[in-house]
Image (cartoon, rainbow, N blue to C red; front, side):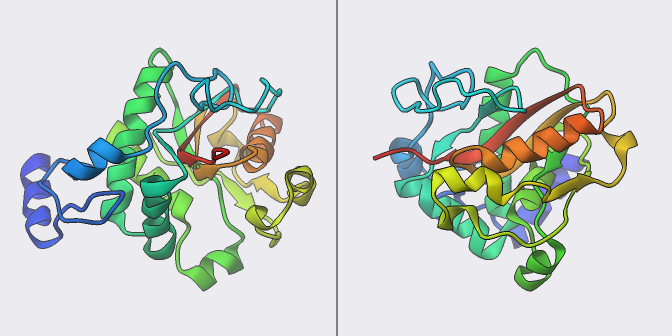
Length: 231
């Protein structure tokens, strides 16, 4: 029944390639061209930042999250796809990314049973102005794809300067005290899959994971749609 309903919905809202936006066949995530040209993150990957070993610059820096993984690099078609998600929060695009994220989660985190999926939050005024939170859209799509409960357990307390506008050395300090957990019972003792659209230095994921652990999370693993990479 679920499959039939999804097929009917696809007739009116056709699936689109998560990277270039072209209409594609039902149950596909990318068009043929993007499958060929996408900047995939391929194994072997760094067991800390998730980038390919040839692209890793993290030097195994200790973080509050156990690991991070992602299907794409944030460049070329990967950057174009993230742009679609950030600028329109297209759920069909999010579903495509979620399918790719689910694959890399199963490949890299295969033996881990996650209790819930939690998105990186936006400050409520920023989300209200934009109309959506791309990380939450991704997290909901991933929750549906992997059949793992979605929990909006984190809340951002105030507006911060966008991380992309800061130097790497400024990013961690920019987020100190910016996040909290509203309902500790949703995270206490839980193994959490933390979701964001991109990772650069990892400062945002680190601060979120730190708060989840302060409120009792047992372990926090991260997944993003893409990772920045030095050209």
